[in-house]
Length: 299
Image (tube, rainbow, N blue to C red; front, side):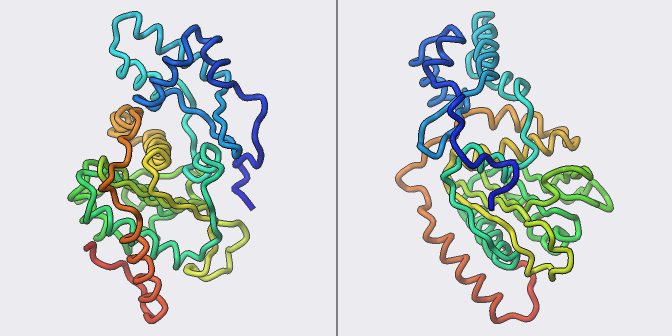
């Protein structure tokens, strides 16, 4: 079963790129160039593989054109409109499932999510140069065992933000930055690790199934998806930055503008996932033979 906010089928009412171009007063070739170079406008990708746009995108494209015609650089105009023109999604999982319906999802126990999380964190610390990092932990009590590990990750990152509810103290001078999730925040039901860097990208996002109040913590079941695709990872980072900004993290505003740019394409030397998979297997094996589970030191 998908997240309730996730559309299950294609929406035939969406606009094609030709429709959007005609309504906004620009050529399809220009829109394709913007999308390739700047990640704007952002289409909804149907399960059939086709791209569709909404009527709201017409206004966003027109805003970019007006700013450009007023003398603002195109990339700056797109960043401004992307940051302020559309309501921010409150859920990483729901947004990725909406934008990328072909992204596989699996039901996993939290113990397996931890293995995936640690593997992504290790790869990020080992390979990524000055990454932007986000971690969503549901509640502060689930973050505390990993706090020392995330402080180490923060040391090598350009920006690190952790999101959770019920922080005893919303600040920690040792880092990372903390974002407090409101009572009604969808992210209170989600687990996520996002690493966005030029040379290494990875994302894990998971949504907790309801009705597990009496289930032991490590046996709780989530619907999870993960990817190394820089486009999908960038979408996840944008949502996480938006949630952090809405929670009052001041520096998130600059991140939102930075992340409005399209990610760099994967190079021939980019990690192919083999090392990440090997780390996951090692951590799963460790869990199977360990009575006490604690986060490892970053490698």
